[in-house]
Length: 182
Image (cartoon, rainbow, N blue to C red; front, top):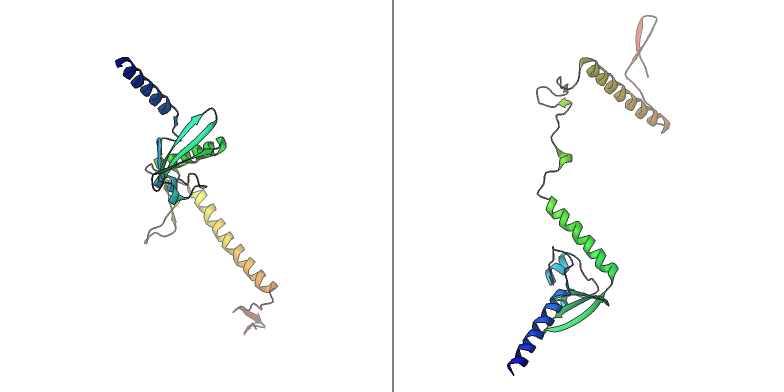
């Protein structure tokens, strides 16, 4: 009788450890047991209603992947999950894990770089002397003026094409008398 009990305990331990080895961890982010909160948060198994899923585990065997999940009222259900779905869930969880782990890190694209133009209330628009020389400053100023004139000319041309009459406040000088241009 002692040998039979020892044999049964040994078989129980072997079968328990064998079934434990079949557990499949989808991703370390969710662990071996997937809760309803994790299912909702990570959009897992959308074919199962969230209200019908309390928690579940994945197993892997020669037949494929199986989701064993507990429903309300302690009912258990099993659903086969395709290899492609498992791979997609793993990829998505990996991306989310990487995203959450990088939230605390500084963004290298938003590093503070000394600007070309120091904008201060008393020195607005003055170029930074440390970064550029006088020749480059002059070229920047000329290009800025030229760009402003080109934009103004383009706007005037656009107004003329629309049929709007552009009148200026200039004077025409004829025979030494100044007359206003109409």
